[in-house]
Length: 295
Image (tube, rainbow, N blue to C red; front, side, top):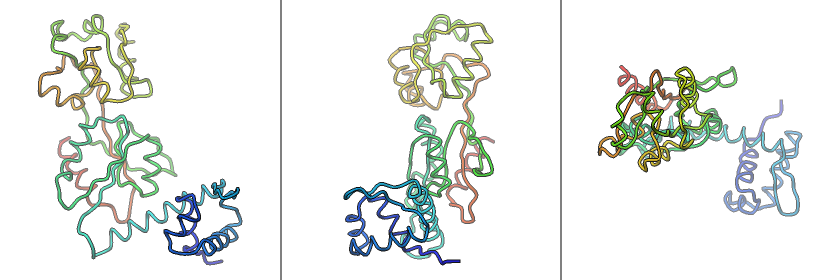
């Protein structure tokens, strides 16, 4: 079997991310001609062109995109190896966490609080879609992903999912809205509501609930961002369906109040990880702290 040259792969990886032979050559401190020759050798070994060369531009081919995905995973694993086993250099530990862009910021801070105040820890937070974050988790670019739905799992996605928090959902709004009393059905008939969009599991549960109750709520807004839902509730646009953690600051100041619980509807938060031979110890510490809180 022909021995694979990882130097060639690193040269390709640099060019693919720089999208320029010139910039990659400067970064690697080698000549453009040498860099071009090395990439050609890699293409010959793989049996596919990795770049579509048009004029001075470089565009990844389909084979190039596949090669880049593998290269990202390979070099991320190398970085993890150095960080895990190295006994020299900085004592600061890194924790890389991905979180759904729509997830409550207050919840994220509360969950990460045990490490946020540590001088020996650097927390890197990345938000995005579930698909993008889980892909980064598989590539070892993230240590953990925070979600509020259990992701689909198969043999190619061996994620470990742990429940880290559960909160009863409530109708929340301005204090004057509480004058109508705490009856859930009465509140829905007298006040417009602010809801998550239909892609959200909370919304699915809410729709099923009002269908059973035979109530048709007046929907003031459908929003895919919890921070915006909170702001709309503060403006008096309607009663928001949220977990109390989302409006923790407003509850503390009395700007918003919990008026009525939403019957049988909770939001559950999960931490998604992958099995590693050298797991980040900070992840285990956070999960143990969350487990104690769930009690």
